[in-house]
Every structure is written in C-alpha cells, then in structure tokens.
Image (cartoon, rainbow, N blue to C red; front, side, top):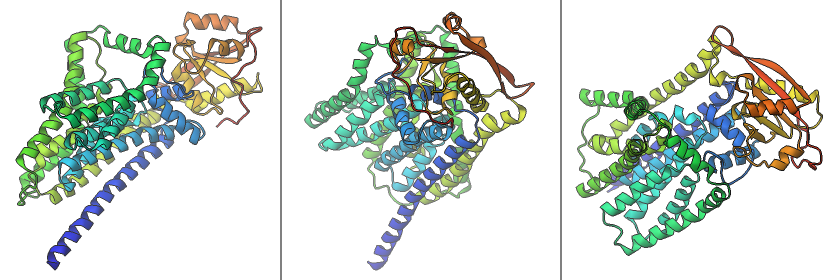
Length: 523
C-alpha cells in the first residue's frame, strides 16, 4: 500500500512539473516574441499598423471588420501610454498563447495529461500559431475565442445539465463574432455535431443551447445596431472580397498549397517522432487505456467534425461564389488538429517517452521558427538595405512630421489625413496620437465627424505615388504645404519615399475643435 501511495504521489508531482513546464514554455515563448518585436523591426506588421489607426477610438464597428481587436488594443494603449511595436507583438502572441491554453484544456478532456501536452505542443507548430500570430489582426484575435468555444462546447454536450459551460459558450461565441464573422463556420460544426448525435431532442441540451444563444446575441447586438446605423459597411466589404472575380481552380490550388506550407512547420517534429518510433526509442504502451473504445470513437469523431466542417465550408464558398479565398481567414480552423493527430496516431505509444521527445523537437523547431522569421523579415533586409515592411523607417517619418508641424503650430496635431499605413507608422511614435481620417474618407475612419474635419486644423500626409483627386483638391485648398523624402533601406534594394504634406486650416464659422489635446513630447 505504501509503495502504491508513493508511486501515485511521485506520478502526481511529475505531472504537475510537466504542466508547470508548459506554462514556462508559454512565458518564454511570449517573452522572446515580444522582445524581438520591440527591438528588431523598425515598424509594425501591416495589419498591426492598421489596428493602431483603428484603435484610436472606441466604437462598435469599423468599415472592414467587427470591433473587438481594435477595442482590445485601445485598452492596452491606454494602459501602456500608446502603441508600440512590442505592445502589438504582446497583444498578438498573447492571444495565441491563450488559445494554446484552451487547446490544452480541451485535450485534457480527451487524452491523458501527458498526451494532452503532446497535443498542444504539436498544435503550436502550425504556422498560424507561431510566426503568423506575430500580426495583431482579426485572424489572430479569433484564436483564443474559437479555442475557448471548442472547449466549452465539448464540456456542454458531455455534461449538458451543467449550465455554466453553456453560459461560457455563449460569452466566448459572442466575443468570437465581435472578432471575425468567420466564427459562424465554426458554429456550423457545433450544429452538425448536435444533429449527428441527435442531441437536439434532449431538454437539457435545448435549454443550455438557448442560454448560449441568448448570451451570444446580447453581446453581438451592439455591433448589429452599429451596422444598421452605418449601412452595413463591413458586410459590404466582405461581399466585395468574396465576389472578386478569379479563376476558381487557380485560387483553389494556391489556397491549398499555402495550407500545406503552413502545416509543414510541424513536419520535422512528426518526422522525428516517426523515426524515434521506428528506432524503438518510443515504444507502444503496455498499459490498457482507461478510456473505452466508444469514448475514443466519440472524441475522434468530435475532433473530425470540428476540424473539417469549417474548412470544408470555406472551400464551399469558393465554388459557390467564385471569389478570392484569403489563406489567413481560416487561421482558427486548425486548432483541433494537434489533438486529432495525437488521438488517432500517437495514443498507443508510451506517453512519457513520447512527451520527452516531442518537447525537445518542439523547442528546437520553435527556436528555428523565431530565429528564421526575424532573420528573414528584419535582419537580412536591414543588412542588404531592402525596403521590407518591418524595416520601414517609421521613427524617421514620425520625427519629420513632428518637425514640420512644430515649425508651423504650437499645439499637438488634432487630426491626420492620410492612408492607414503612413498614419499608423507616425502614430507609433507620436504622442498624443491624433485620430486619422483614413484615405480622406469619413466612412473608413473612426471617431470623426464632418464637423471635426471642418473645425479642426489637420496635417495632410500622403505618398506622392498615391495621390488621388480627393487629395489634389485638399492640397489646392491648403495655404501651407511642402514635400520631403525618407530613405527606406538603401540602394540598390531600397528606395526613397517622396511625401507631400499640407496643413489644412479650419473652415470659417465651423466652431471650436473638440479634438484639441494637451501638449506632450514626441515619444
């Protein structure tokens, strides 16, 4: 009896150490990406820069997407005194880490504790869950809410009388919809599972499902009201994207190949596991599974439905609408894959041996991914002077804008009129961060009115190559204007970016500008 207690106690302590090791891995992973994102690039990633501009105001929708990512970044910017490259990386990879924790929690419901660790480590090797999660965008922010929805849905259908799982499911589902409309494809997999398993005939299921739907609708409803008030701009944007003409089979081939490439980051680890099994270092388990065959089939089928349903629907829309299918839109659809691979192919092997080697292979692969990403996206372009996104001279641009403005005005800039890439790079370093009239369009912009544009002094800044007629008219009205250039890298791979600028004065009789801000220093 004493020996049995000691063995059980030692196993429990070892399990706790392994799970604490997972949290240590996540902390180290997040720290490396945040420090690399703050110190190495000269600018933020393209989508992160767009979020910098949108996050300047708090509202229930934006012309492209639902509001939650921008609202989250708005809160972080308030807490940490404005946007920064490191904060963008923290927000993005923080979402990824939370998603991986939920993947692990779900895997523990399906697999043994050690195999659950294997499952989450394999999931972390999919490109959408490492270097693709460096960008703070709607795809990345959808990861934690989708992973949480999968976890709570599994718990809800397994224990339907436990109302808390249904309530949490409604909460995270509503937040998922406030992040990205593609969450509907994941919810479709929930419906298919309920129908397939004939669960909609159970009173507890129907009661819980009604609770989930009511909570999700309540959370999503402010965005619906905003859509109605603003003539459904994000739906019109989505419709335009989905109906862009293109050759279906060409798009399908490119989309599919991209998925294989992004899944291929897990191949070295899977290949290593296969070789270790062949060499006998990982052996088949001699302990009978505590999970019944029926339970294993149930869990396998659940993961298959959760994985293939949203992916299949994404392919289906391509055939039905013939529109462009962006590879990044399905970032959250691969969350069940690591658990599925582990359950189907690895469940019969000795868990301790398997976990030991998967940890080693994962750490090596993740190191290669982070080093390779920053080397190829930042360090190499810097060395050869290439005009890469992450080597854009954001600080030089912001310093030049500040210098010009201070030579003509004493107060901070009330409004910037520019495209989101140019303005976002200025806001990365300018304090306080003024609101942006994106592309000189009120429909695209956040928190601005026609009265603001009429009553406030504004700094107009546009790349000379991208001047539209709207900007030409705006420049012609300005009394103070000029040009300057900024070096993006160096020749022969770099280029000079030529900007034109102007200071738009308030219109006569327009009233006071509500956007006047207290003076602060440039960051």
